Image (cartoon, rainbow, N blue to C red; front, side, top):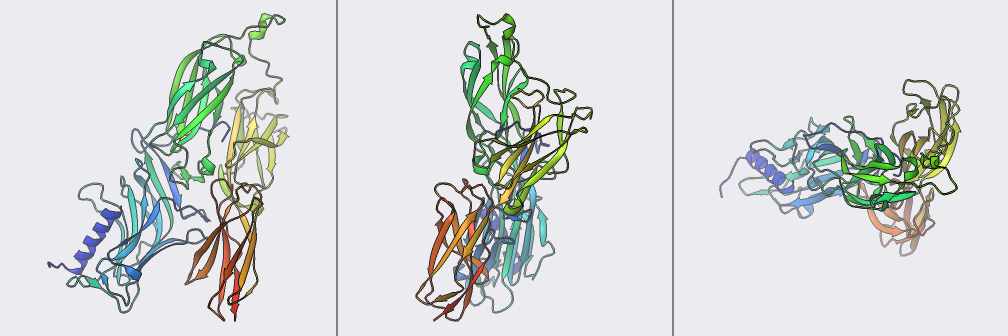
Length: 559
C-alpha cells in the first residue's frame, strides 16, 4: 500500500469528508440588496438565537470509517447553552484512520449558501476537528476551520462563512493515526471534538413568486357590490409566499400573510444587512390559496386595473398578475344617480385630516422574544402627517393574530393626544402578530398606516415528582403547560434525564387538551445515586409558544 505523511493523509481525509458530506394585515414591503441580479437572501438561524433555543432543521449526523463506539454525535440544542457536537473518542479502541462523526447542514434545494456565521468550539486533541464546505470553484479550498493535533483553535468563537455557492456545511471530528497501518488508537490525551452552538446561515433565493388559477366574479364582465377574487400564490423553488397585496388602480384592497405556516413564516429577527431571519428551512408555504372580497363601491363605474403583487420570505417581490376589470354599480330606483359615487367613508379620524398620516413607534423593535410571564407589552408612538404635523384626537387600534390562527381580533384602542402621541397595552399572551392600525376615516376598511410587531413568547411548563424513588416501584411525574392555547389533540412533552454529562431524552408523551400530563418511571438499579429529571415542550406547529423546560427535580434512589 502506498503511504503518505500523516499531515497529507489528514488533509486528504478532511477534503474527502467535506466532499462527501457536504398574517392578515397590510405588509410593510422591504426589498433587500440582491446577492445577484435575480436573487435576494434570507437567513436560517439554528440551535441558539438571541439567547433562546432554536430549531436544528437542516442538520443531520453522519459517521465515517469504523467508528463503533469511538465516535459520537449529540444534539443538546433544545436546552439553553446547548450545541451540536461531534467527537472522536478513539482512546482504547482500534479504528480505521480517518474514522469520525460530523454534523452536516444541507441547504434547501435551489437555495445555496451565500454567507453567514457559525459559532463553534473546536479541539484537535490527538485527532482532527473541522468546519468546512464543498469546493465550489476548482482549486479553491473548502476549509473554514481546521484543528489538527491541537488542543484548541484560535478560530474558536464566531466564524464567518466566506465560501459561497455550496449546498452543505460540515462540522466534524476524526481520529488521525499511523498512515503505515491505516489505524489509530489513542492511549492518552484529548479527543478531537467540534461543537456548533449557533449558526446564522444566509441562503440565496433565485426564485420569483407566481400566481395561478386566477378567477372570481371581479373578472367576469361588469363587477358590482362585493366581488370575489381567488388565486393560488406560489414560490415553488424558494422559501415560500410571505405576503400578498391586491390593488385596484394602485390602491390596496387586501394585504397580508395568507398563511403563517404554523408560525414558521413569522420572522424571528432581522439581520444587519436587512434579510429576514427564520428558524425553519422552509419558512413559508410554497403554494397558498388566497380568497379576497373586493368592495367595488369605493371605485367609480368604468374600467380599472387589478394587480396582484406577491413577495417571498427572502424579499423577492413581483407583480404576478395584472388585468383590466370593469366596475358597474347601478343606483337603486329609490336612490339618486349620485349613489354610484364612492361609498360614504364617515368623518375624518383626527385633526388635521390626512390620508397619508403615518404611525411612528418609539423604540420598539419589529421582532422580539419574551418569557410568558413578561409577554404583556406596552407600545407607544406618535401619529403625524408626512411633514411631521401631529394628528390629535384620532382613534388608533391594537389588533392581534395568534401564531397558527387565521383570526385577527381587536384587543385595545386609544385616542392620540395633542402632540399625536398614543400608548397601547397588549395583555400577556402567546406568540403573535401585534398590529397598530390607523384609519384616516371612521368607516374605512383599508388602513392608512399599520405598524407590525412580531412577539415570540417562550412557553412555561411545570413538573412535580417525589424526591425519593424505590427500586422496582413506579415514580410518577406530573405537570402542566401554562399560558393556554393547547391544541385539542394536546401538545408533546419530552421527558429528560441528566446522565453522562448531558440531558438525554427518555420519553416523548402527549398532554391532554388542558395541557396536563403524567409519566411513570421505574428504577431497576442505581441504589444510593441521585438523578435530575425535567420536562421540555416540543412545539408541533399548532402550539403558539417557543420551546421551554421545567425546573429540574432531583430524585434519589432507595432500596
